[in-house]
Image 1: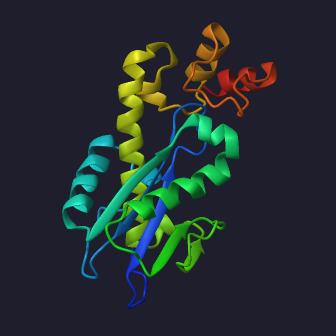
Image 2: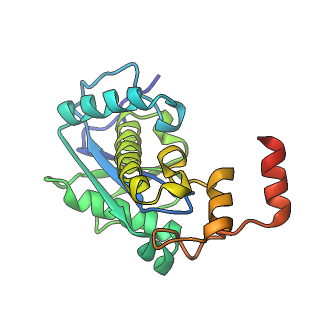
Length: 204
């Protein structure tokens, strides 16, 4: 069961989506919720497998949040500064887009590059503990899924409508068959080793 972070400060929860993908941008969200926000269905987006349920939660968050913002960084940005720094930079973008300045940032994970002079706290698996981080995870995930679903219509061979750019067997095989496109992250290992593909197929 999620809880609110115990603080009188204006707290923004931050999380990202798409860090482990082979293609597409990384998305991040920053969310400031009212102190009385309550939704028993809200949880870490990775634990909510039903896409329709995530969309219902997205609408509830957007309607009830005091402030929220979503941002993205392109594959080229990821290739330039690496995925870890790109994830932090995308959270920075999201915080910057907020219509007010939070007094404390709650970051899902154990590392973060400070943003200006705003204090922050990193929390491992924070999206399963605090409402604001879970809300950020839902927004980042749903916005990214929507983006990748649109992109999948232009690049159907990679099966992004189902894998959202993650390294599934079908996605890996498509890269082997037709090669990567401009939306792939060139700094990632796009072509799996033969042994990896054998293991992937055995697990299927």
